[in-house]
Image 1 (cartoon, helix red, strand yellow):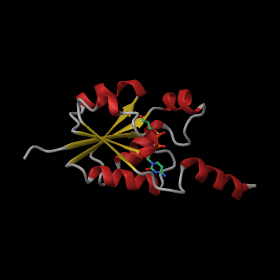
Image 2 (cartoon, rainbow, N blue to C red):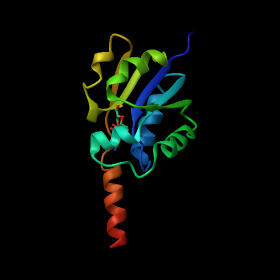
Image 3 (cartoon, rainbow, N blue to C red):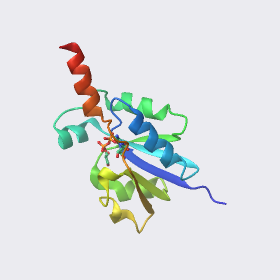
Image 4 (cartoon, rainbow, N blue to C red):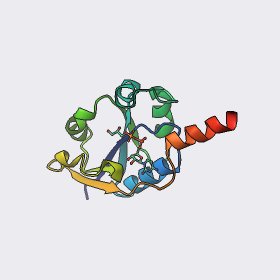
Length: 134
Ligand code: C2G
């Protein structure tokens, strides 16, 4: 049987259990999990602030997980089709906060949205830590 490659994307800043769960679920859909980690510049453009951890740190952290086979830098939200082709992905996985947003690659690969893990986000972790310091 040919191996099945799964691709997913994200910032994965201040890694938390919501990130771990979606990466594990994504990995379980195939034989190989490739993760596009969003560039610092993309975050500044998208969210108006840089991530807490730099892109090289986030690449190293996500790439160290045992269920992640390869990581690369996601430099643009518009390049999904190129990334899917480049990494020969059979399945693209995202959390359902992105529901429907990646359907435009469904002629190239299967597109799956998993429910987000409730009650945890990088923003909430940062806010929590901030209140501890005040
Ligand atoms: N996620 C989740 N549950 C949470 C938080 C995040 O399942 N409680 C999922 C998101 O749905 C996403 C992945 O974890 O699939 C990464 O989330 P973020 O780091 O917030 O990534 P984001 O900034 O949404 O970047 O091209 C897409 C972007 O790079 C996605």
